Image: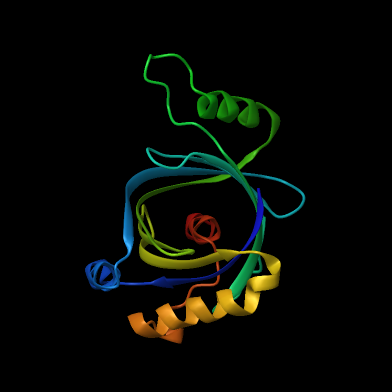
Length: 180
């Protein structure tokens, strides 16, 4: 499924304040997911396999590494969760195939709380080796980008996220930098 996401990512030292804002705004809590994102080396954009207890997907996206608001064109294939009968699940099989076919760039492990307010998705992340982040993603069609940007800015302002806290790089890039 192809879609456009207007998004911001920011460092935070107070995920509980973000959680209180979301709860007071009537956000729908999806759950907390233990996620492993495996980034593969590709010629164009980014390709990652997400394995989690809530979200499992193969995701390809193009996005600039810029602080502040940015748009991503995303192709997302949702995958079923892990098997309960002990057999190998589709995400496990896909991971095995991708690891044989493509070099792995980096693996990102995180604990992610997921909330929605309408079409706006919020991630409250604790990323191993990097710390805590909040992501705001307004999801829609390409024709809706001005409205999507406005939604992100409104929530950013309501949360009091400063320009200094914005992060332009992906967690995969941040982890690769810290390792070198």
